[in-house]
Every structure is written in C-alpha cells, then in structure tokens.
Amino acid sequence: MYKIRNKAMNSFSSYENLKAIREKSESNRIKENRNHEVLYFHKTDDPYSHLTIQFVEKLKEEYSVDLIPILVGEENPDALHEPDLYEKYCLEDVKRISPYYGVDFNGDSYPEKSLVNKANSILAATESNNFIQIAKKVSTHLWNNDEEELSMLQKQFNSSMSKVSEVLSEGNKIRNDCDYYFGSAFYYEKELYWGVDRLNYLEDRLTELGAKKSPSNESLAPLSIKAPEILDSDKLINLTYYPSLNSPYTFISAKRTKQLEKDYPINLITRPVLPMLMRMMTIPTFKAKYIISDAAREGRKYDYEMKEIFSPIGKPARKAYSLFPEMDKRSKGFDYIDALLKASFQDGINIGEDSFLENLVIELGFDWQEIKPHLNSSAWKKVLDDNVKDMYQGNCWGVPSFKITNADGSNPYYVWGQDRMWLVKEEIYKRIENT
Image (cartoon, rainbow, N blue to C red; front, side, top):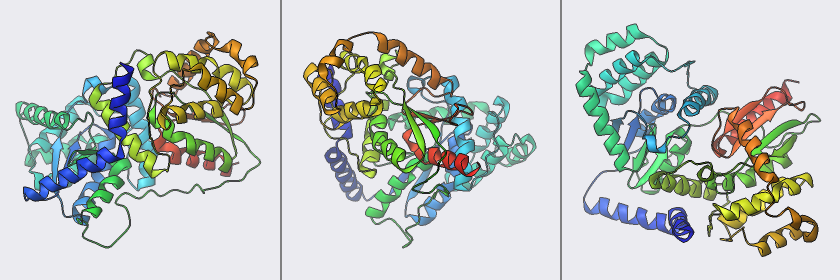
C-alpha cells in the first residue's frame, strides 16, 4: 500500500509531469483551434467567492480569454472535513484578509437560506456575458442581508427553484469532472487555481502563452501589507506552530517558519499533531491530487521544492513522533520536525528506520544511547492529543496551523495554512507596534 501511495504522491508533485501535461494541453488547444478558455466556479454563499468575484472582471480585461462562469452549489461532501469548523473558519478568514485586498466584506454570519435561494435564482437566469457584473451585485447584497435589493434584481433575473436545482447540479458535475470540490476556483487546461491565493499562477501561465494584453506586471489581486521583512523589538510574541509529518503544506511552510523566527521577535513553540489520515479522516484521491500538486508549485515558488517523497503514514510516523517530547525538552523540537519533513518530502527517506533516527539525533547534537529509550514509548500520544485539542480551539483542524499569543499566553489568534503566513506577520507586527 505504501508503495502505491508514494508513487501517486511523487506523480502528483512532479514538475516534469506538470510540464508534460501543459505542453500536451496547449498542443491540443492549438490543434483544435480553441481560444484560451477559463472556467470560474462561483458559489453564492461562499465567503471566498465573494472575494474572488471582485477580480474576475480584471482577468477578462487583462487577458485574451473566454471566461465561463459556472454556478455551483454545496461542496463535495467527500472532500469536506469538520464542516462546522470549516464554515466558521472561512467566514473569519475572509473577514480578516478582505481589507488587504481592498474589498469590503461585512458578513458576520452566513446568509439565510431564503436569501441564498434568491441569489441563486438570479444568477441561474443570468447569461454568461453578464454573469460577473451581476454576481458582484448579488454577492454584496447577499452578505449585507439586503433582501430588498435582491428582490429588485430578481424582477429582472428570475429562475424557478427547479431550474436553480438543475443549474447547480450541472455546475457541480462540471466542477467534479475537473477534480475540484469547492467554489471560488479557476480551471484552465487540466490545472486548478483556488481563489485569489492562486490567481498569480493562472496569470503566469496565461502570460507565458502570450494571452496577456497589457505590458503591466502588477498582479490582478495585489496584497496591501504593512509588516516589514525584518522586525526588531525587545518584546517577544509567542508563535505556536502545529505541523504534521505527512503534510506537504507543512513541509513547504517549515523553511519560512524557521526564517520567521530569525526575522521577527517570536518565541517559537512547536506542537505537532497526527496527520489527518491517522485521525480517522479520509482524503479522496482527487483532493489528494490537488493538495500535493498545489503544494508542489507553492514549494517551487518559495524555493523549497518537493523532490522524492516517502509518506511516513502509520508506523514510521508513530516511531518518529515517539522521540519528539524528548527532543522538544532539549529545545530541538522544531529542528527535529523540520529534519523529518525534509527527509520525507525531499530525500525520499523512510523516517521510521532506526538507523535514520539515530543519525538524526546525533546530527542534532545528542547521544543516541540517551535518547533511544524513548523510541516507541507512548508518552508522545498524549502530547499530540493535547496539541490537536488546542489547535481545534481556534477552529483549525488542518495543518500547518499557527497560534499567536502575547508573551503571557493571552489574546490567542489562530491562523490556518501556509497561505496565511503573511497574515501571521501582520498580526505580530500589529501587536508590537501597538505596545
């Protein structure tokens, strides 16, 4: 089983495979005399769709593309873990990041089902060439709970609920056939780009293919951030890092987390958790494919590329975790996890081998004979269980997650994902500047 999993992960992360798929897709497009066709999946009550829809018109203006909006409904349930936490986190995340994109988002709660039905009724009746403009209005009114404005629009654009159901079902099928599972995503020639976070990759690809109309180098959705690259202060902020040993996103975050410790006044606390697959969660193949391929391109962007992968799921992970409490007690918790991740995602090493763990302990400056008695012990299980409970306190269930607190542990601020490391810096900077 592990050989099949490793082969699949290496296939999904391979840059050579990606380039081959792109070359074949472009060759077929030219042969079939097709324009550059970009699909955009829009979900009315998805906070991220509200943010993304603000920039779709700019994509059409800046690039020679046929943009096809697809109205979708509920997320694919097979790909949705902890749905209650997911909804809470998405809402909070978009509220936090929207100002940095110059977008107003006033959603304090999800809109009522009756308003969502109105919104879908309007958009199901909207032609493709008018969809983006109307969807922006609908989204604003929906998240402002403005029933009157939605009703006014519904007088112009209206579909029966059976028509809405048909459109959403068709949209979901198209989305699912593209191996995706949420809204707020773009699809272009065998590749997916989720929301404003991945719009830059779509831009790069279209630019390389000669589809860009203007000479401007400015991205379609630039971030307006204040935090400097390096911050000096006598005041320390606690930054808790929640990694897992089987997470490609954790791997690509480790290098930047280490750099953040050098550049910012933080006390880095490492609290590893079990991989989701070892927490009785299942990840369907289509989601695993997207996660690994997406993490791979993010790794290339941040110069921390995934190379040869050996998944540590199961016994290797348990054995490696068993030494963590002792390594952390000796102030090497982060370095230990970092080395394990590099071995698994760059060097293709089975981290469950005793010889590897022995060499790693020695490299970190310790006597193997002192550390060895902790191998295969059970103390680590409670440590990791406590860690995941703490992570869940911030509506975070995936990794890497981060928690910022003041030096005394007060005022916790949780952030999920390596995509939000810029937001981690913003929050630390804000706390330092306001003291």
